[in-house]
Structure formats: C-alpha cells, structure tokens
Image (cartoon, rainbow over all chains, first blue to last red; front, side, top):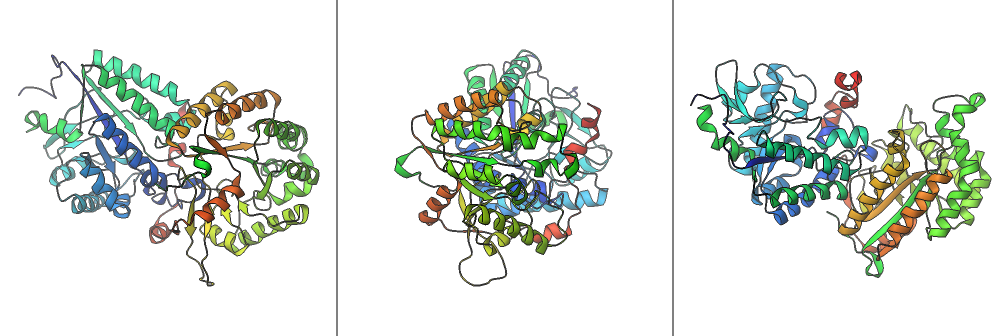
Length: 267
Length: 303
C-alpha cells in the first residue's frame, strides 16, 4: 500500500481516541518528591479518579486506552486488572513516569521492566506506549518493536496518525498527541481555566477534527491537583463525549484497535 | 473510593477552612522592619479583612476552621479572640510557615511551639493541623500524633475524609489520625495568584461545588484571609456570600468544620489505611530530587 499512513479520505467518521494517563504517585516519587500533603494528588488516581472514569465510560459505553506507569501498576495491580476487565486497553507509560532524558540502556531496561509488570497482570501482550513527558531516544522505537509493540503515541508533529520508521528500518504506527491544546494539564496547572471553558475549547477542537483531519485525540490524567479526576473536570469529559456520541460522524476506538486496523499500512 | 455516610441523610457536606497566613507569609520574603507597603497584604487580612469575613460566615450560617501559625497568633491575639467568639475552630499551622528544618526534631519543635501558643491564647490544644506549602514531611503524621492532634488537613487525595495509621516508633496503642482532604479546585490563592478575575474564580468554584454535590462528596473550601490572594476584600466577600448561599441552597448539604468532621469520622469506625509512604520509602531514598519539572521546562520559560 503506497501510503505514509492511514488514509482518512472518504472516512465517514472521525475517530476519537481517548487516552487516560494514570499517573499515580509515580509522578512525584520518580522526581524524589514524597507523595504526601499537597503533593498527594497522584494518590487520587487509584482512590477516586480511575473508579470515577470507569463508571462514566461504562455509562457512555465507550472503551478507551489507559497509559500506566509500571510503578503505579505494581502498587495497584487489582485496579489495572479491573481496567482491562471493563474492556479498556492497558498501555505502557514509563516506569516512574521518567520526565527527564534517559540513556539508551536505562531506557531499554525501564521499557522491559514496565512491559513485564503490565503483561504479568494482564496475561496478554501490551501493544502501545506513550512516553511520559514526550522524551525518547534514537533507540526507543526499535526497542518497542522488539517488545512487540505496534504503536507509539508520543510525537507532536502531525494532526493524524502516520507510519513512523525507526533507525533499524522497522516501522510502526505513530498516534500523535498535543499537550498544549488537547491535554488537561496546561489548563489546570498553569491557567486555572474554568472547566466549562476547557470543555467548550475541546468541543471546538472536536468539531474542527470532524470537519477536517478525521482524528481527535484527547489526553487527561485522573489524579487530583492539575488532573481531571475531580468532579467538575470529570463531568466536562462526560459532557464532551455525550456531545460526540450524538453525532453520527464520530466513532470511539481503543488505540490498539486503531493500530491493528491500520497494520496493513505498517507491515 | 472511601465511602462515608453524611449524617442526617444529607447528600453532601460543606467544610470551610481559612488559612490565616498574615505577616508570617510576608516574612518569608522580607524582614520584620520591612513589613510596609507591598508586604502589608497579610496585615490587611488580620486587621481590616477579618471582621467582614466573620460577618459573612455568620450571615451564611458557616462554622469554619481557622488554621493559624503561632507567630501570627501572637501578633494578633484580638483576632484569635474574635474568631473564637464567632464559634469557629482555631487549628494548628506550625510556628511561622517556615519549612527549612534541618532535622525532624526541629519540625516537631516548631509544630509543638505553634500548638502551645494557640493553647495559651484559646485555652485548648488544637486538634487539627494543616502544613504550610511544601511543609509536609515524612515525619509529620507521627509528629501530629505525638503532639496530640486528632486530624490533619494537608492532603489533596480523596473526595472523603479517611483514617491513617502511620508507621512510627510503635509507642503502643492504636496511633491513628483522621485526614480531612482539601480540593485543589476549591482554593482561592492558586487562582488569584494566576490573576484571574474574581468572577472567573467563583465560576470555577461553583462548577466544582455543583459537581461535588452530584457525587455526594465532601465540599472542602480553602480560603485565605489575605488582601492579595485571599477573599477578605469587600468585593470578594460579596461573591463569597453568593457562593456560600448557592452551595447551602443545593438542598441537602450539611455544614461541618474540621473538628466536627473529625469527630464524625472517628465515630464512623473506618478501617485505618497504611502509612502513605509505606510502599514508597525505598524508591524515594534511591531517587534524585528533581523538583517540579514542568515549571522548569524551557518551553514554558519562553512564554
């Protein structure tokens, strides 16, 4: 197939990919910050945020992708299994949410470690990875390919998925994201924007994708603090997806299903 | 998710707390002989702002908790007296909002000194504690138990109060502490620090309070007394009054302050949870301290 990515022309529906970055206490512990007092926001993910989203997604009848750091999965294996049992995809997201540059060797070891933690819990292979903070090495994709992954969701350089090639000449699907516009973190960590205004912005983004690229990827974090686990910020996701479901031009997919569907373009 | 039934079959519970944070906060940036001009916002709250805030609480039927550090309490004994006269709780906030302790003993001493000053002014030991920003350490929970505290209100990790059983030096007995968590959304200082209009801040609060009511959670509102990032200026008090009346008007909202919530949780007999650092100590000891990476990101410095 002569294409550099999935051909969205002629697609009747816009694909909505919803990524929930679990980001529990790993986010603080990895930076050497004890997850206590005001820094306890990561604890909210397992205690309240993830259960809230699981119930909401059941109500909406939508299956999505959870990116989970290995360290958090070690501490909450039952919840990770429950996420999978409810029909969602579990994908990898670093070990201690490493938001700093790693050497090739360090990175390889951490990718293997998290992959083993998740596959031991799930009893099936993990197929996708998202870099915590978007950092990669020149070796990342080849290592993921070795581990059997079929997609990466870390790049910021396109509006729609495309085939990405690693230095060894292998290829996989790239499912790009944007952490300035389509992520909860900038709005709630830096600008403290009222949730209803964030909802309206994302609705505008969705409408633009439906009319244009045919692809809409949103990322949230079910933690407290700057995350979207807490009530009003969770409810705008419910509002947004209720709105999306009213359209016959939108379909929700887990990222691995999307990647599998487009594997022909990769292999 | 911790589940707790609100008394009287109420659907949700409003808990209002005020971080007094007067000159002690300004003194983190300047010295005693320079508390003028730009360093007067703390004094504004303790002198000018307090009366209006207490009147607002009275009008809205709110019994609140005021977290006051020892040095501010010593500077403003009259304020402490009027807060008490209003029926509100005075709770601990350490000695002076400083957190540059070199040992856990220094932290213990500071929290203890703050408690003693409050006790000498109010006639009772404080039951509740809220750490200054970044002032919660691996030892704090144990210090609080040692000093006779019954609850902490520094975490932001749950929709409901719960109970800790901290790891400690096993002095015998059941060492537990109630946690009354705060919400990151329902706070004045962060949003006002980002220079939002008052209208936008209160819009955010109302959206969160309405959603919390839907889920039947604790509705924990954290206020500051100060004239810069706090709520005690007249125009903000007008909006606060409107907000509190909206929340209490949701229909089935209980109102409790920290010590009332603590007593309720103790009575509910929840199973204590393990020390929050129990499963993290080894990794923390092996981790390099990197601080808040997002803030030091060069892309954000550019804008």
